[in-house]
Amino acid sequence: MSAKRKFKRVILKLSGEALAGEKGYGIDPVTVDSIAGQIQAVRESGLDVAIVNGGGNIWRGLSGSSKGMDRATADYMGMLATVINSLALQDALENRGVPTRVQTAIEMRQIAEPYIRRRAVRHLEKGRVVIFAAGTGNPYFSTDTTAALRAAEIEADAILMAKKGVDGVYDSDPKKNPEAKKFDHLEYLEVIQKNLGVMDSTAISLCMDNDIPIVVFNIDRPGNIAKVAAGEEIGTVVGGL
Ligand code: UDP
Image (cartoon, rainbow, N blue to C red):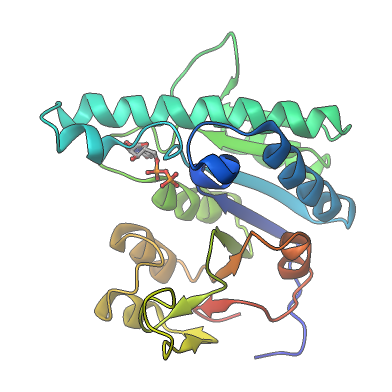
């Protein structure tokens, strides 16, 4: 690996949980503001920053369908949850004076722009943060896959994959196994074959086919987003940088 990676444009993938704070559900404004502050620092360092956030702090399609709901309906509810999170993040960023646009894959003109790839790229070129909401717009997908798809579309240099409670990818659960070993680097196929749970297999495959590196890091430590964006070798890198 090179001493310092150079990124020009990144996608930050935040799980819905990352916005929930200690409670583990819903939106905690203090936590959202702290994340917004970290994103602001990255943006002000000159990087183009786009964000995909999940919705798991509000609703996950699979948990609805496992209780008998129609899967597509439950997934659309999940996509709407990501829009709520995106608006919270936009609000926190704009409170800090960071111009931010939300683009949604499901049209809702009153609250966000529709997703238009060329327009998203233009926003980034103008120094705005862009948040991609409502996933891919399709049920049966995840926001990890959304991050991979949008990263390919906007030609991002990497996906910065923020995780809560863990500082990279391990060969077993470090909370249960004190002997668990952290990987510094992994190949895409290893992630799938060893079932390491970095992303779902659809998302990993898309990253592999389009040579998009993924950096998995811990978001609990303040300042880590800026560190990983600046190329510090923390966490685990999947694919080549
Ligand atoms: N979702 C979907 N299609 C997409 C993206 C998301 O149907 O393209 C739904 C799916 O139900 C998912 C929910 O939105 O469970 C929230 O996203 P995700 O579970 O990826 O959020 P995270 O785990 O990152 O909080």
